[in-house]
Amino acid sequence: MRAAHPLTPRTSSTLRRLTALVATATLALTISSCSIGEGTQSLVITSLTAQEADASKTQDSSSHIDNGPASTASGTVTMSTSYVAGGIGSTAKELTTIVVSRERSTDKFQWAVSIKPAVADQERTEYTNSAQSAMNNAMGRSPSGSAVVSPDGRHLSLILLPAEQQTGETAADLRTHVVVLDTKTGKTVRDAKVSGVVLGQALTNGTLAVETAQNYFPAGSGKGTITIFSLTETSAQPSSFPTDKWLVGATRENLVLAPDLLPDDCFDECSITTVSLLNTDGSTAGSISGVTSVHPGGWIRRFANPKAASDYQQRSKTASEDERKSLSPSREAVEQQLVNPSIKKTIDITGKTAVESGVPTGPGLLVEQKVPNGKGSTEFKPAFWLSSADDGHPHTENLEQFENN
Image (cartoon, rainbow, N blue to C red; front, side, top):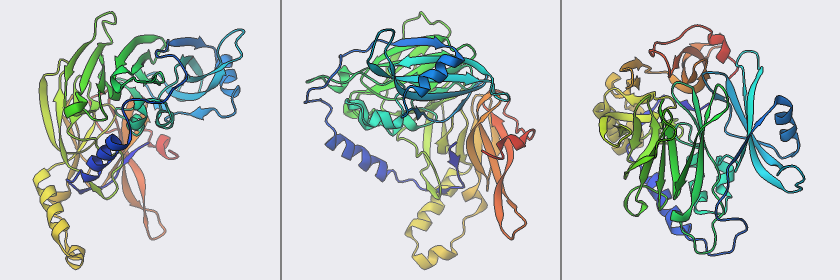
């Protein structure tokens, strides 16, 4: 789970810009040394029984659990990656991801598949012999990384590892599979093939969006492109449009784009930005100001009064250390909301934390607040949870399911 903690506004994105510049300067987009492997990879997805899934995971003692459990409309999905025998009569082992779905309350097996190439989680992406390795941190982002669930919980999309680059190949020569699974059956809904460095992906309830570029950023020489694949008309040809912004998430029907990548965690100070809502044809559907984080399923955290929050940040930035101790923000400067633009829902969460959490309908949020613990201090306890699939009302039932999370 990823927590969005009580925030102090910070508008500077210098660190992220510096990181991008360093990555651009130090990581070559053209592979100059020889690499082993084919320039393209064939996708192999195999349905497994419960016994086969367990056996595959135990073949390799270094089996690695990916990303963390993903909550869907049908259950809980886990992923593990290890080296598995390539097939009958083969002694070679190939890096393979096993995806397993189980019923949420009983842990009963529902379905499992093995996928080759393996899922491109953060660690494996870092060590892949390709230009994609520089984007390893982006693969760990919950709303737009290597594994995302649609707001309605019906689809799971996985970015797979690209083929190793050959001598002289550039970032534009990268070829990557992005696979969308039906979370009820495990069947493949769509195999999307894209070229270039994959910056991220997002799922609306009906489409897969994949952002690619010719560099490690979408603007300028990156020549960012968002390609749209229909999940309802799976034989339809994909469409695409150019962009200079980052794909950072999606609502039920719109894509969410930002001028910079948003921080994964906000503890004390967080950037404030304005995100754009785009239709899947690339046209503008709206915008939201004062945003500090975008969560899976379309919930967006923001300051209710971006100007007051920004003004307080500026005063705090220019104040001396002694002045800062006595500086107190107004209510308007700290008031925070969770908004869901798909259903036009706004919920006040001032003084609370919002934690990304699996809920019975799929992706969602657990909102916690401080309460006395009887020992002279306070601790965070669940206040309510939010679904990404219903009318957005706060749920207070079954809060005990989150006590040990």
